[in-house]
Length: 480
Image (cartoon, rainbow, N blue to C red; front, side, top):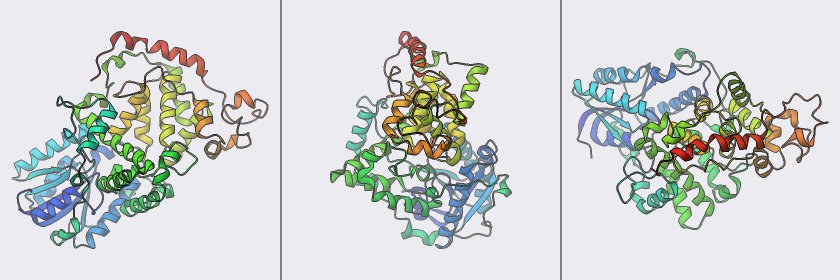
C-alpha cells in the first residue's frame, strides 16, 4: 500500500472512469484529499487533424467523468496544455505530495512520465504509477527462461496458468470516495472550438463515456456465447464493439475478463474465444514493453530488408486503398467504413492489411499510419501488432506465403454482399455471386457504373510478393 500523504492528484489519461480504477483507489486510500485532473495534451493534440473523432469521444467521456466525480464530492480539472509542463505546475498549485497515474507503456508516454517524475521530485512530490490497462503487463508473464514470449499460444497458456481471482478483482473505489476534493480550479470542460477542433459525428453504436461502455457490455453479454460463430462476418452483429472503450478506459478490463473467464470455465465457447482476444491485447502490450524497436521497425529485423514499392505509382495505389477505390469490393467497403465511421471490423482489418502489403506491395508502416489517423479505437500496441502480423514481420505472424485472396474472403465472410452493399451502394444491384468480383461476373451490368476496375491482378501480385519476400529467407534469424 502506498505511504499516506495529505494531498494527492489523480492524473486521468486512458482510464476515463470512476469504477474499478487502480490509481484512483490507491490515491483515495492514501490521501486525506484527492484532486482529479485530465490534460488535453498539446504534445498529442497539436499533431492531429482538426476533425478527429477521438477528441470528440474524449470530451464526451470527460463530461461524464466530471459528472460522476461531482456526484461523489469531487470535480475534474481539465487543462489544454503540454502535460509534461502542466502536471508539475498543477501539483504545485494544489500543494500535493503525490500524483497517481495508470501505467502507459507507449515509448513516448514513458519518456513523458519520466520527465514529469523528475519535475515532481524537484518540487518534493512523487509520481506513483499503477497497472490498470491490462490484466498482465511488462514482466508478469515470462517464459521458463525468464524472457518475454514471442509466440501467442504459449503466452496464452502461461497467462491462463497465472490467472487467479486476485488479478480479476475490482478496486472498491466507492468505499473511499469521501476523500475526493472539489476545487475552484475545476471550472468546467472546454468545447471543441476552445481547443481548436471542429465537430465530427460519432456513430450511435459507439456510446459515450463509461455509460456507453456499460450499455455496450450489457448488450454483448446476451451475444457472447455466439461470439465464436459470428465474429468473422462484418454484416452480422458479432463483435462486442468495446475496443474504443478499452482504449480509453471507459470500461474496466478486469470486469470484462472476469465475466469472460467465468463463462469459459462453465463451458461457454464464445466466451473462451473472446477471452483469447483480450489476451491478444495483453500480448501485444508486453511485446511493446520488451521490444520498443517494433513500434517503428519490423519486430523481426530481417523483414526490414524487404524492398517495398515506392514512387508516384505506389503513392497512387496507396491513395486508391485509402479512399476505397481499389476495384475489390470487400476491400473498398472496409476502407469506406473506416473513413465514414472510424471503425473497421477485425476480419476486414486483416483483409485490407494483407491487400496493402501483399497485393499492392506497399510498406506496412503506410497502412499502420493511416489506421492511426482514422481509427477511433487506435491503440499503438494492438495496431502495430496487427499490421506486423499481416505483413508477416511481427511475432507469431502469419507466414509470408499465406496471402489472403480478397475475393475468396469476400465470398466466405460476406456471402450475400450485405456489407459491401452498405458501403459500396453503386454495386447494390449486383447479384450475390457477382458482387465479389464484378469485373469477372457482371461486366455488362458494370457499364456506366462509377466503380473502378481492379488496380492489380491478385494472382500476379501473389507471385511478386513471394519473390519480394525471398530476401527474408537469406536473412532469417532465430525466433525471438
